[in-house]
Length: 319
Image (cartoon, rainbow, N blue to C red; front, side, top):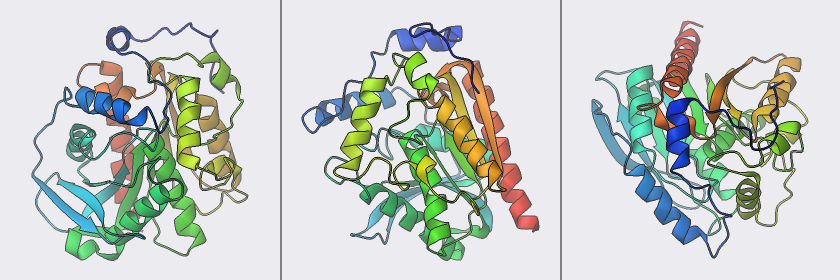
């Protein structure tokens, strides 16, 4: 279990502390505020680096309620490459393929995987289960059309950050429950796992940088619409059965509302015979991986995550 700090005591690594000092916490997300917050996230993302990759392809794939846009990042030429189907963060209400363009490019280059970034529908315009149904449909499409995409169907992983990591985690349950594809791995960066969590970190880190508890709870409510916040496809910690999930890595910042939930989730999966590694990164806060170009701790954690991803998909190929 993570060590807890008194609320307000956030000893961030210096490089991240300097960045967070210039970024006000996200306000509560509501139908009235979401447009302005989206503008803010687009402006912030425009400052992130966008490294070159071998090729980028934009297309759409069939979704449950119409085409779902995806962007494919190829780190190299060739066929039968491993792949990561990626869901961007942003509280299921913010961000897009564009805001996470640089991050996905970096993951492709570091992991050697084709990254397939999914433009799932956002709340409040489209509430649960729109996002997870879009993301799962895209992930299943990649496996089912692996030859067309140029990837190995046995080496397709799921991943995302924050709300996107929630979708990547839930997609593992959906695939299992519906008899869908077998995914090779889950790369989960600070996932939302429990919409109503009261574990100690939700108090100790209630005023943590980037996303505080008020903003987080508003995002959950906006995404859920009228659904039960304990629905297992919303809050996977309420699933009855944790067996049969892909192996996973959870990147857990020390100062994050979700850090205790990450350990609780890993324990449940392990009890069911699965494998989850929790990489808790000291001195960091929610969203920190996006600052890999300026924060050595973020770059090191991203390296660890990409190595774990590549090891898992290569192991899947050998089985």
